Length: 264
Image (cartoon, rainbow, N blue to C red; front, side, top):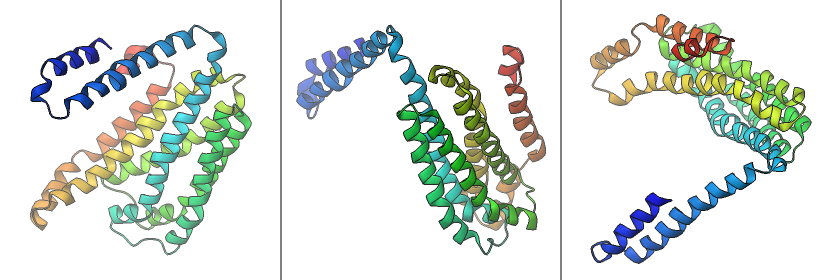
């Protein structure tokens, strides 16, 4: 808040040299200082009241499911229909488009059910939504598995993407267990913290690393010879890198000392 007020003072003193300074001063005050004050002090006073606490768990669950299952998950599952066989340099499965059209309503509808259940405080409904998402996920990955059986992943990019999909598959049942087994939303929020690492680092980060490892050399271009050289450098030590990342994630989920977790 002090920083925004300081910025307001600077603009006020130099307003003749700044374009649209009146509106800028208004927004530095209202969107900057006042809005930050509202967030900071609302959180402070809400945290002092025990009945504000169940909302934390409900909003955290809704936040995780909206962003990781909805925003990231739907994008990934839709993109991999064509990107996965391209990365493997093989043909797309014949039924891939049909399966994707069938899976999309299930996945999207399940996200809506899961988030709604969390927001309304209905853990069973939220769990049903996640279970439905798992069912849609299993249906959607069938063509991807067919392609992988035809041509097994060999490069770092494909291993990273495959590992990411496996981490998502393993995290979804865990999310269902958390929602069903938690006695309160406050307890659910504590247990959800255990799933952040596999969902964020195991799934989202590895999808990003794998996709970029494949796409960046293509974007850089430079002709076939340079492209092959760039791809070779991007693929250097592929087996070791994939093993270290995923073994480290597994160890991180175990009850190990904090220093070991930070290292892995």
